Amino acid sequence: MGRFLLVAKKDKDQGVAERIRNSLDCHTCDSGAAYDGIIVLGGDGTVLRAVARYRSPPTVYAVNRGRVGFLCPIPYAAVDELIARLKDGREMGFVELKRLCLAGRHYFLNEAVIKPSSMGLGRFRISIDNVSVKIRGDAVIVATRTGSSAYNASLNGPLLLSEGIIVNVVAPNRCSFKPIVCDIGSRVRVEVDGEPLITLDGMPCREKSLDICHDGSTVRFGHLDHYDESERVEGLFLL
Image 1 (cartoon, one colour):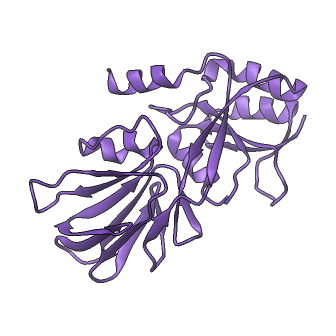
Image 2 (cartoon, rainbow, N blue to C red):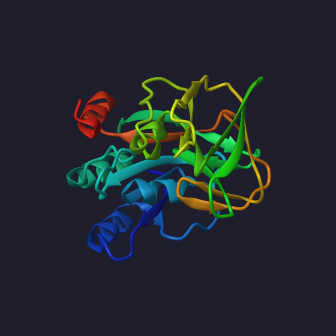
């Protein structure tokens, strides 16, 4: 049995959280120790906040208490099974999701949203490797494969079934603009007139450099035997 960090909303699931603490070596405040895993009781937003500060996050065991729970592969009804497996060191399944890196130090698993601080349409220059395009719009979204089913999907952006990067624009001034899909190894730079406002996975980020790439960082999720990613995608998009 290892050492775990337990992340849960304070106003929910206190009984379950207490049961987990009593069964495992769990901290509820990040002390900077080397954790063997992060146990999350919540939804996708709770997971994203839990891993944001780590360059190499511990394995995440995310129990779904949210509305969608795409990043939470462990059903709430299976909490006791999760506790037993972690306590006894029993076999579990794992899946790794790639993250992108902004300016060499800020990580995001879903998307970066970049917009101007001033009112009105922003003027953007988007560079992908050696190709550049200028466009005006409300914001630019740079999304991962995982994030392709989040904000990007609400803009009718493509759903990625393999690793890659999506560059999409919110309210582009050109009706002909289509989201750009590029290789996971591509380097993306976004330039905007004036001061940029940046959010990474819904959290504000103060940064001047807007260079984005995949530097090898991943988030590893533990799951039980009945996890099936294709079924989750089908259920989310009613395919």
